[in-house]
Image (tube, rainbow, N blue to C red; front, side, top):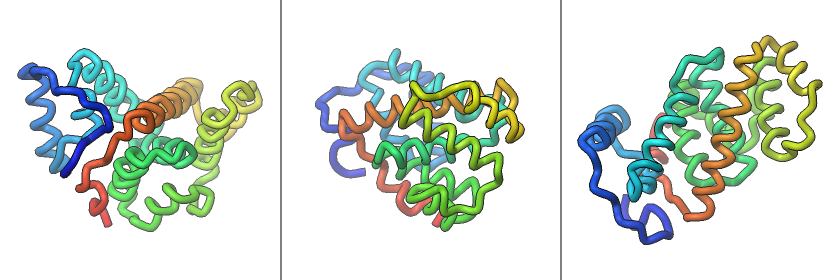
Length: 187
């Protein structure tokens, strides 16, 4: 990527060997170090907190598939118009689904996609939690249970939704820019 990663002038901290190894693993697996990680690299403690939460939510044990978690990330980011996350996680949806058209539908209007009733319920909950969190009631959780989600799954849906709402707001506040490489991935 050319140019600045964010609009802020923050110098990268001296990174530990563990963080350097983590960045090398990203480079090996993705072909890049995501700019969100480089943006947080001004403070290794904040970077570690971000990556620990992200890795737990997106890669840890869950009743939600990795694709479903990425779908939540994209739908939340679509509502929030988060350029960074739509670009990065749109690429992940394209890759995990093996369907570039599906990835584009998720970014632009998930309701245009051919989704299961389970996925529709999950994403409608994520939308409501993003747009009107104070209006979440027991009926919303009951609808998720009826769609086949366990209470642990509901926790994961809520936590993933909340994490991307936070991330979208930080990305917007600092004008975080996605890596150029994401644009061509899985197309």
